[in-house]
Image (tube, rainbow, N blue to C red; front, side, top):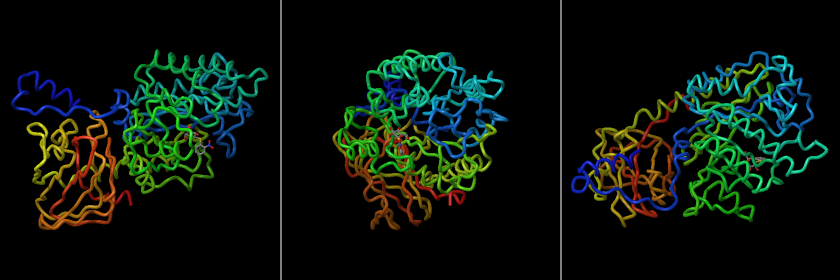
Length: 481
Ligand code: OTN
């Protein structure tokens, strides 16, 4: 981690004179779970369950007979192969969706795989999923839907009684399946489940899986490492702050704004996770085979999620065979190829960099283009602005840029833009950057192609002096168009 590197440099005696001191963090900062989560960038969501075996059902009522669950060729390694080719390092499986059907042989219910036709009731999808994750180095996550329509049908159902049922199932999943990297507490239909219920469930996660990122919303929000982003269309707000308020906001519109945009200088660090399906539905339905999001649509979503300081949780629903459909796989792998082509060539990488701003040795502006996310440019304490000029070896045409902040040091920059010039004296602001505010983990802006010899990153305002580790300009890959 960059902060550690600098601390070691100063311990070795390189510090006092040779290196300037690192800036102090500003405001709430990410914990280690959040830092690891941000670096995933894209997580796969696998909605798979009894709904897959019903025609056009996405929110089952808990009454479908367990026997109908019967994938003919389930192969979780096939799912992982797509993730490996798509550069997706983590995945979350719906172990139980709102219909209550359990993909593992839970000791606490008969409603699940053990009463299905699949493998004569001897199968365990969660086991096959976590084993495949382990074998391929993918980080496994579990969605255990808090809302359970099947249990609601029980004549003695009360939220208090359900608390123990859910706790027992959560304990099975948090203890019997190895390391779990994320749990997902969907807020859909779960309003009656109060924060005290979640308090007990939270302890089960934390005691057994200390590194597990918790997605929380509504009444589970006090335990959240990451928040819901406010819609399922992939559109984070602009700005999108990782900070927000830890107390639930009563007013509905303000609540959705706080989810979508965060709260500048909010008192808690709870970044936004963006859940969106590659198909219109969350579960697979063959009727939607012609409506899979294209690489260009996925690129749009990537830019308004990962490129807006969020992490993309992309749903790839397995079909009735228990396999990913080839079009879903192809499109997400093409997205990765397009991302690699686009961001693999920073047109600033050979530029001469100059700035009157700068903290001193160890924090020079050229570190913005060295391709190393552990080194960074930082300004002087108390100076919130900075102009950094990049002179390219020759004129370049570009239509995309990316800026990344040192998130360990908090949300610092709050207003910035990018200008271009042919002579280094007369500058034009790229219009799409004129209102840029938040940076955070990654901010991407796309625009009409610009041709220029000079580029200027202009940090206009901040909570504190800037600390930025990467800046680049790019041409968008043809694969993404
Ligand atoms: O009808 N809904 O419940 C609904 C419609 C559209 C978008 C979301 C929802 S529910 C919503 O789901 C989120 C995850 O996608 C979070 O869990 C929210 O807390 C929940 O209200």
